Length: 182
Image 1 (cartoon, one colour):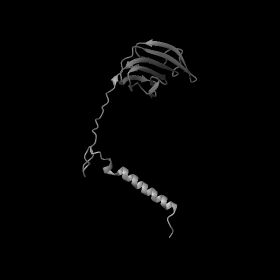
Image 2 (cartoon, rainbow, N blue to C red):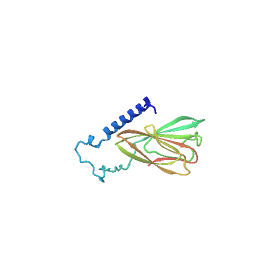
Image 3 (cartoon, helix red, strand yellow):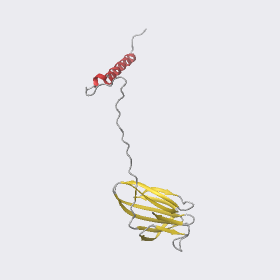
Image 4 (cartoon, rainbow, N blue to C red):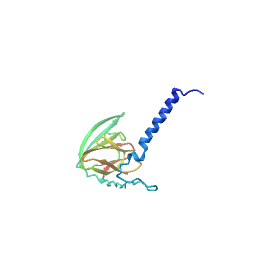
């Protein structure tokens, strides 16, 4: 039988060091400050009480004072804004096109409005029969393809206090066009 080599001595030293380290950190008497009695066998550790946070329901978005509405033609994939109007309410409905020189299913409406909001969550409803994209401060919140008939879309978004810009892009893709803010 040979004498112990360097590998064996290194392994024994590592094992001894690990045992000392474990004893220092796992010794229950070493860390007890005496502030609380040690747990008796069978006692459950105290658990904090978790109070569920119920989020406030979303409030109806105040009606914007006015909407900036632009009509955009789409030709060969390029978009050209051709008309801009300020309207007090967003309620647009066209059987085919808004103007005689527009081609059916090759145009869209871009509507902008600003609202001042307090912190919380707000919602508004759009009645639509078109392809639809909704943005709050240039961040897309929701998009929908053109439905087979008029649909309602409830848009909900959380926010801090401040002024927010709403942008709605509604594209005519088939059949009649409808976009209304409720």
